[in-house]
Length: 538
Image 1 (cartoon, rainbow, N blue to C red):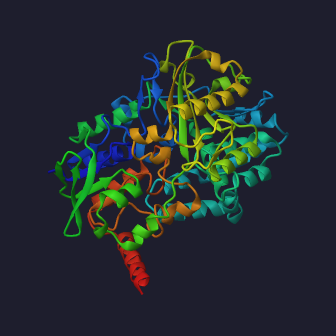
Image 2 (spheres, one colour):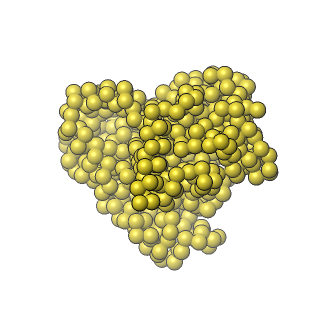
Image 3 (cartoon, rainbow, N blue to C red):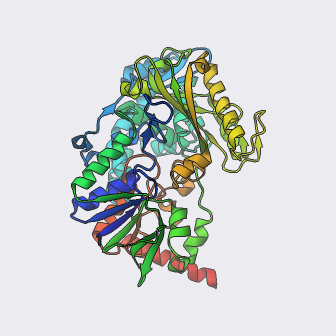
């Protein structure tokens, strides 16, 4: 009998398992898919000589994460690689905003849009450098980050106090308008905000766009050499070297609760796996509380709140094997690992509004990845392993384009949407489509079938909007890895601090399990939910 069972071999589950093993616990990780990794995997399914990342690809949060740094995965063979430029946002007239790890290059690209915008970017970077240690400390520790929060408050006061706090809460459109005279800086911030599901007018989107931009400026958007799965392989090797086990093809269908405590799990094959000390679930909150744990073990208030859980946007992805590099109209875009494609902030607003009204966008905002540019080992010399994704509604009410897409995502609709993405790329890289040797389509249902945590193609474990962050993640009054069931811990991106490959939810869950006793926060959570149940019955 292992000390702990971890459900899911995604990055959070593997980080949690490694920390438990470091503490001397025996750990079994059960993964439903035939291979570990969750959303951190690659294959050669597009073309034999091309390594294609199936889901996530660029890892600024991993580069910044003290959780992953402490695991010393370089000792397990993990290597990182960077493209010459971090991110580019070209426009059709050939102008291009660029984030480079060289601050002077970033500033120069923005200065070309409007005099003074280079200095405006430097000012944002100065705020970041003053706050960076405390922000990262607060981001990657359990909520509430008491000590880290106190240090952040001190640094925030020194950096400008309420004025800086106001800036971080602004919609990214407003932040861009206040800071930049030209379109370049505004596009970098707004495009990075839409790495999540934050529209340019959403409260807090300015802070998120600024954070992602500053991470790119400081750490870049690195990739694992050889493919995303190299990160997973390093985590698995480290765990197995400490006696942990990863068992794939083992779908967990039930968390066994006895005497009010989680004591193990049951698999789809009928196997019961007992856990001596804890069960950690690297699964979405709706899956944990809506399926794996029987309703009688959960407070009614939690089940009611769960009905209000909001997923982030659905995702549609295309992978390509290209016969040569992409012929961008801007030479700077050719050097970037990540390329954003939208003709101005207004186009981003239009894109987000179409999704909000249930319409498939006619000119999608495309996030384009040039993997061979970032890591030459990904494909033969002179070629490019590339991908692009865009967002679509979970529930389609109409098509803003001419293809009459309904959201069924049958073969016809998949091909039509992939063509639409390619047409958007073609606007900024004339001749792109003639270079395609092979392509693969990953529609929302496909993504979910390959990783159940990607519900409908949602890639962040739930919306990044303010109403489902911090103490509201995954439901009001929670915000920590502890659950109402003693011995059971939420270790996925549905928990604070949310999506991204950084390992914090898994680390937070492991540390909570290692404490081995109810914390003050857990006791408060249980009282909060119980009191709300009582009020609801009056």
